[in-house]
Length: 329
Image (cartoon, rainbow, N blue to C red; front, side, top):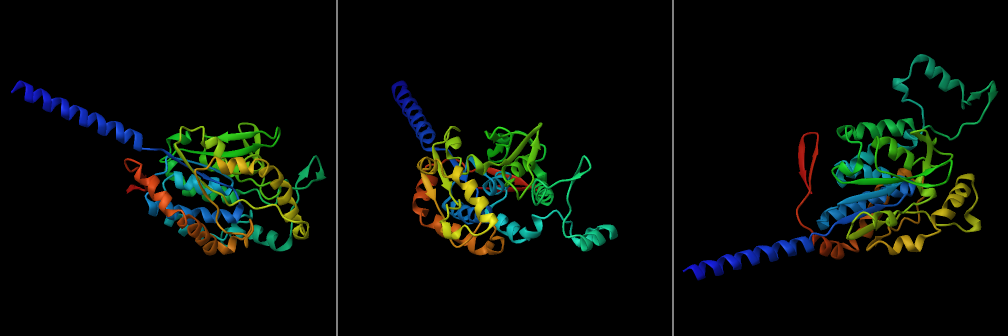
């Protein structure tokens, strides 16, 4: 009898050990990288819908510029359909301006807006030029509202999904990985496109758009103890001479030189590379939200089987809490 009991005990122990070992082996970690690309970044939301459909559990998110904005909101607990609704609720052209909505302006502000087409800064008694077209205050305010539920978290690895974003040190040109601090401020710095949005000062340093140094940070994600990297690439492409016909396109071309320096290497570091067909849109195609989101969805659907295979190798679901509502992913 003792021999039978001992045999059963060993059998159960070996079975439990094997199951535990198998689950550890199969519970792979997935990192998601979202590139910058202005309005083209709306495609990230469409791709996220498909990742959710496939059952992918995202364990880490990294992004630059618009990819940082979408990534930060997703990391803080919003789901893809919610992000879709959020994007459609904003007039991004108005949001990028510093003007307050007319209904909230004082009488003096309304008169000033009607009288003057432009305002210039004064420095030491001399008229200067603004550092950018917008200070980005409206963008910052909206990001703050949307992330109010996680304002007490200053270590981005403690967000519902750990997160990082990339910015550029304006003084040195160095790549800076932002993983701590006030999330809306970090995201604003990552997306402070030169001449369009004011540089962002954090701890005495000035930061601009991370796309200048690393617009598709798959290399950074690879260092995060991640097994599988999924990359969604919505970067603009270098243009031919005939298309360089305006100041914005010339500025974008100059910025893009650095972006494409290591483009092939960055692509190769993604195990699943998703590139939406958004060639007909630009970084300022803010009125084409639905079409761009659909392009992201279509591109990800082409890899749905591969995504499902990855999801099948993952373990437990992650729990999210926003506004006292528990969500399972």
